Length: 260
Image (cartoon, rainbow, N blue to C red):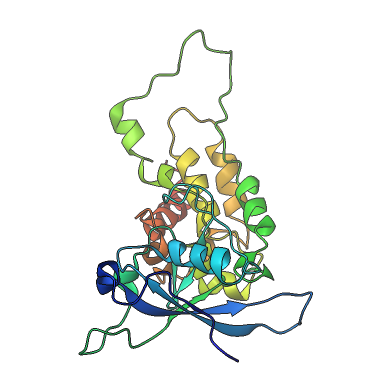
């Protein structure tokens, strides 16, 4: 099969001197066409300071409009464009071409950039996966403040120290990069997964919340925190730098000591 090529810069122009010729090798899947996935190469000229998402946009807009992927804010906040890039879970909008290409001695790109859907979830089309089970696990851990007693007459104050206790886990953007990097989740889709546990941690250790015990009992289930094997894949995959494995261990400790 011929490789689609896109060259938007005229040969010999000054602007072309800093561009790289890069092959995007994308794992495609379209249930309306075939039950089997396949790899397709797209070659394009791109500035190494651009992002993988920019390359995907160029392919979809100028070469093959059937290419399907999710993206929204394009600034690393929405988390919708998580995918496997060169075998690692990343956000396409935060991954620069220059950081992932391999160059030969002549300064030419020697290997393609491989892109595929995140693992452990049903692929619906191309790079889009079914996120419903992921968000169901998130909902199951009660990711909201539960405060008992009378309605307060003013805001609930919290010290800086109490806020710092769960600050790290407030950074989660629900991209599923951590959960879909977990080998336990790959083999057992019933496991809550790192992202759900991180979001439970955020409220378990919130001094204003009164449902910590309830969340701990949810995570004490056979599909909860005890399934974690501490491989640190989740921490390595998190695009927000959350210490995911540490958060899971803190929830385990809270289950044993009932102190949180």
